[in-house]
Length: 227
Image (cartoon, rainbow, N blue to C red; front, side, top):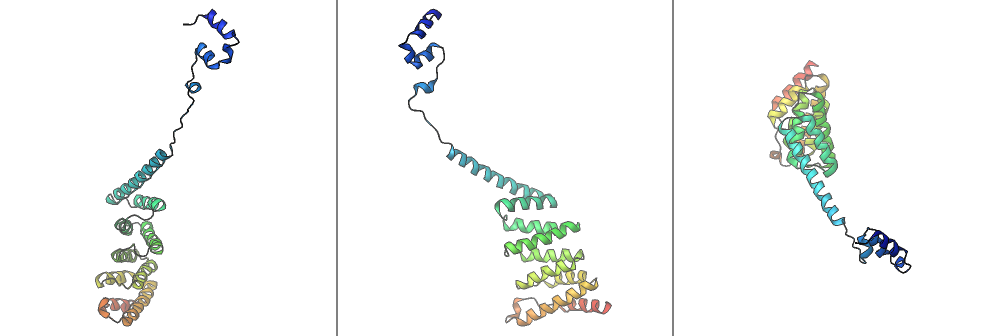
């Protein structure tokens, strides 16, 4: 222990004043970096990269679980918003989930949500034409027809026809039945059936496509007579 008087004498010694570390000790303060001639610096770049990857992975999993939960509980609007969030960050989710979102939206009794299902389907087709199943297109066309959205329904039917598909006669009859309830719908159906006939006639293997049933044409002809 250094007495105060001795400490004063030592601090006034011209020889000792040339030794700053010693004075620091005498003043009761010790800084380790003054005595360490080899300061070490640790890089945190690798740990930060791992944390970022872990955060991204957990965010992707959270959004997927949130989307699946919304679909299971028929929370259509929540599912749509989560779907858009996931697509902006990571692209489209797996094919099954993407189709489930469209189908659940189009099964809604809300006209707005049904229209959103149509808009979503068009966007998906533009960016990834093979992502939507034919069955999903068929269900969407039927839902649009039931809502008297004749023009959007015909767009979906023509998208299917461009891919070489026509709904099975059971579904096509229902779609036509709903669309021909209006004059504009009757005109749309007539044009579509004409395109189906042209497409069928151009096929070399006509067994590859369902041949339209007479019931479908009778529905269209009956509507033409009414209007």
